[in-house]
Image (cartoon, rainbow, N blue to C red):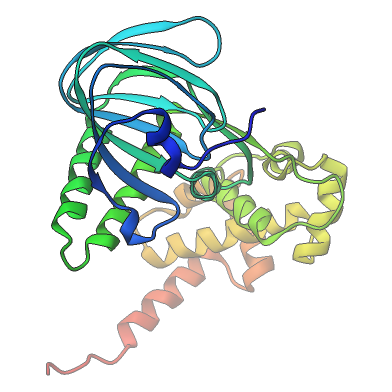
Length: 306
């Protein structure tokens, strides 16, 4: 792979009139520039950053080659082109256009991907998109340009928020992400525990197999069972039972559903199954627990009006 160039070097290869620049804001993860370009035929070295081009004014036939054959499409106001980082590209157009450039750092995109997908991203590439009619990115570009041009209080924070929106939108629609496989050794992490709890909350009403639960973390079932016990201090089935009892207790406190309905909703075979497990874990039956909760509410002192 060829060495990459900084976005500041881009005008050396693609000369144009700089209309607006956010570089003075010293944000290293997301930069905005607007250029007015005459017709050009340019060969661009690989860029450090991901490049998003949003066409503002003018219309032209755009020819581009990244990998493989040349591609051609017509671009104009509101159209978006995307270029992944670290790839040579050749562009040719025959009419004057004004464009907004977003330069998005790989670190920023990886951080956002980690949060969006809740697992560690290892590699991220943008798909080869020459033309996309994308109103969301066009709106973000227009709002960000307005904030940079206005230079008002809070503008930097506003653009940071728009940058995050852009990253999420690009990840959802134009990115291919490769995730790091979890190591075959080592303990469960806090992130693993959070994913396990979320998965169980979403699937509490059905029987979840050990293999399904292990797949959430990427560990083999046998290794997962050992790591689970070491982290939580109990085997997976005990943890699931505990979550079901806690969920049943929450429904009983709310009082809207029958005990039979609560049993089925929280993954117990039937009402008697819930009663037996609930008494074992809580020291009381579901019916007595509900009655005690209602009595406690009825006896609670009423606060006088202020």
